[in-house]
Image (cartoon, rainbow, N blue to C red; front, side, top):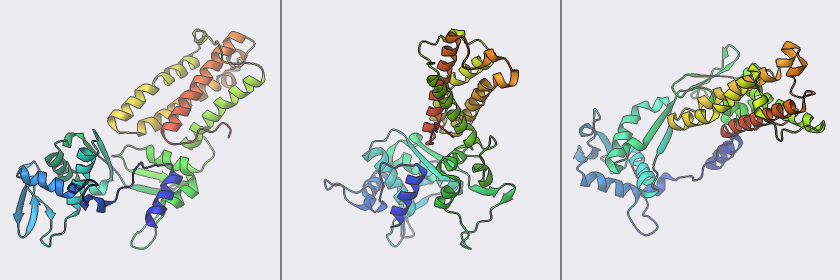
Length: 329
């Protein structure tokens, strides 16, 4: 029942797992009758001389592998420790399922377990360098300047379901993505529901909706971006938008190589800012030649092609963050 509730919550949040893993399976023989992941991992450790019996328990001699102390893998009463399950689980990931890279996302309160898992994974699989442990700081919920007081012991909590119900899945995802893993996160519940440019979620999605609106209006007036010559785009606000769009592939590569998705969230805001500056140029300067749709058909087509490209780029950013890209707001 609890697992089903978690599945439902994550589905609402927009997170999908390809496989739900039972810890119990780590201690069960494989389908073809082979040893369990737990037995296979211990066999490797024992064969390589990384296990020692002391005080009736079985220890991983982590101190010989770079850790400051040894760690118990089997208690004196014969029960495996959580650490033993962790080692077996990473044996399964690397050696059974054959993963090239493994990324674990943990809360910062688990920082004390990082080193021993790295050592244990290396000792069993020889792939410790392919294990990436990301520690995320805990979240502080606020309403404006006021901190929302929470207490697990006192039963005063806000579930993810309740958070999503209050601010919506898009805002929840974006605000969690906005900060680096190492940064303390303040989640402003009031800001997340504001329908104004102060709210970065509204700001980005509204930019996408405005892009869609421009293309729809242009189509209604018989204009299309087809054949638009981008060489005609020479105004500073046009070139600034082009340059910002060209950064998208660099940002995606940065996120993929550093495991820091906050770069994508910040880029989304910067791209939206460049578009708003482009779209507001006429209103700010009063020059009708700065409108997207002008009396110059060639220039109109070029600008519509820029708008079309910006819509694609911003839509891709929203999609990569698991957010919706509204056509109207």
